[in-house]
Image (cartoon, rainbow, N blue to C red):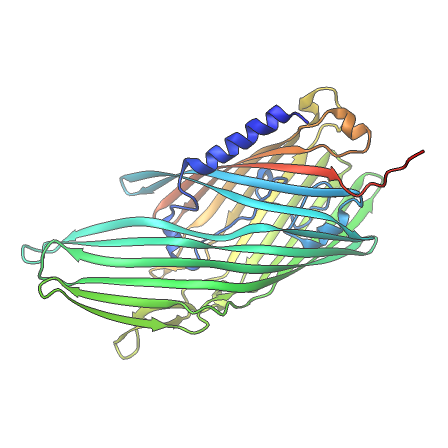
Length: 436
């Protein structure tokens, strides 16, 4: 292994993480549970996240827990990654750029029993981060009124999973996750005149819950080197047993008096049922081409909102129609010229992908922005070709590039360029030593 190269990559990765604020700067993260993670890993970031039908003993694939049963009995895989991004926001003639970076994921897998693989790791679920304001001039008596919107937080998940190869073509698996996080959102209005009270609303919640997802893969051989794999997943929807709170503060600037009201909704947050299906074709070690389709039933989830009820009173309660079903389709390909070429470019994985995602929230009665994305990437071996000839899997430096565009009529347009840097370590932990 080239230690100097790995050290340089790690230095660049942590520099990216420390270069900008963590999470997101998107104003769209003020809706729902925030910007949902695309859950890309080292092997599939260049393929735009394709992975439901990806089955290989050389990667960690938490997208479908059935894939864990493919891991080699002598191998321990560990994959870590960071992501950095630059986003350009455009509304009318106004433009703004933002930089973000974060530690992305850490996952591992190993053979637990014959035909049974296990995995573990940390992954993001969603991110919230925005800070913007708008001002309106009323008249000479009331001056300029400024509304400020701020939000921070996010949801994370730690998981363990197992995959079992029941019979040769069929594998099944399950992931069990511990989900935790917080969010704090606020909307405040202030005026340059003392004739108007200052009003602010603060929304907060602590989340601690669980997640369960099931997976299956059926791999059918065609000829000697060709395999067709069908993958399917189901994520169970349930209440998060979290109690979101809204606190309203009305401050009179003239009398310096403050009126505070707090309302809490019991079990006010939920996760939707999630369904996914993927199809992949693999030709030896040279080609993989796959497509994924996922659907999340957010439309069946009520979400907390501060609104005017049937009696004309402002209230904080669960409300239907704020969220909508989310659909996501990705396609991607991975090409490896050869495992044993003398030149480095012959042993590099070349990856491309594309995707389309519909929003899971409504904004002022209309659909949120749809997302179009394109990606490309490389998987660069860090060990000498001798490793592979001796049956050892080389560590991989995975670099993925993605461009995404979120846009809708009369809403902010969000163009993001994202880079993911991941390192996949392959260790032979379970080999038996033989002494002559």
